[in-house]
Image (cartoon, rainbow, N blue to C red; front, side, top):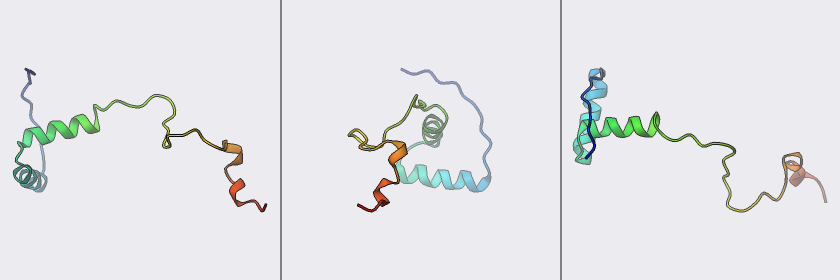
Length: 72
C-alpha cells in the first residue's frame, strides 16, 4: 500500500472544469489525473548521455551528414 499525503492545488475554474470532464470520461479520479501528470512531467527519469532514435548503428558520422546531397 502506498501512503499519500493530502495537499492543495489551486486551479482556475476553467482548468478544473475541464479536468473534471476528463476524469469522468476516463472513469478516474481527479486526484489520479493530477498524480499522473506530476509523475510524467516532473518526476520522470531524465535520460543520461546520448539518446538514440535508431536501433542500428549510424552509417555516417556528423562530419558526413550532408554527403547524401553530393553528386556521385
